[in-house]
Length: 140
Length: 140
DNA sequence: CGATTATCATTAGCATGCTATCGAATTGAG
DNA sequence: CTCAATTCGATAGCATGCTAATGATAATCG
Image (tube, rainbow over all chains, first blue to last red):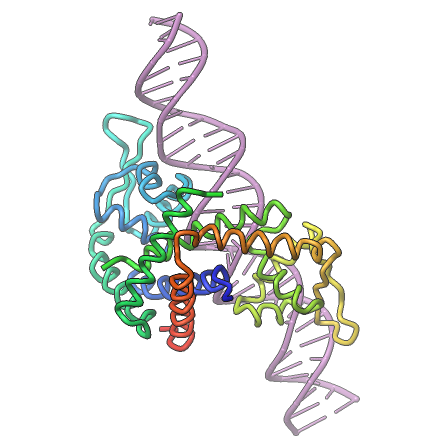
């Protein structure tokens, strides 16, 4: 009877720390990566749109965007049609870290799961997907 | 090729939110639970001892202990032999929430993994254990 | 058209983690 | 025994998330 929740908390903490360290070499913090990943897919989104895609609160994106602006990863630009909107655009630097950050993440994933067989890795992904779906459906 | 890291981040966030909500009914926040779990096992430990057992930084425990003291879960007492030490002792309330919090956690774990077979749950626990071991051994 | 309502980003303030630093107390070297 | 080194908890300050409140702008209803 393993404490799944406890194992999960531990693993999540270690993975987050390792991820942060791996990406920090490229000037990207772990909390900034998810925002970058959305902007890499589609540049010029608003904080609200990003928050909706990520399932986070808008202020989280606003605050992260401020730190990313200070880090030179994005710039804020006013929307030309709607003065309420702010659009986040990648800087050249924000675009240039895409490949190295993706590679660093992939390397970390391989390293963390080095003692798992490919089948076990697939099972893990399937289990995580099921848990996510379950918690989304029944948030109680 | 699923993004294991991304799945992990998502699942960890949802599980953490659900855990916090489940325990908040008993006046315990998710960050306080790990400290409580150690004190339930052995009362009267110092912040440093708790941090060592949990693998966290000492200031994390100190700050959490302050909030737990305000919540009436623990009290600080000076060590009789070493004036540098502070010992954290459970209050009657801190002891009384043990069973309901444990049950709430167990219920949440069952709910989150409701769509997994017992075998899949075991595989998940095994995979998490392997990942934790791997990240502990090779923190790079 | 004008006023209410809705929709944005932002700010303020909290919880949870961290590292770096501080001050107090103990220990250990000489 | 004394003084430097070590070991504590505590504090300051940062990153990352959250909710609630603010203020500006758009949209809608009458």
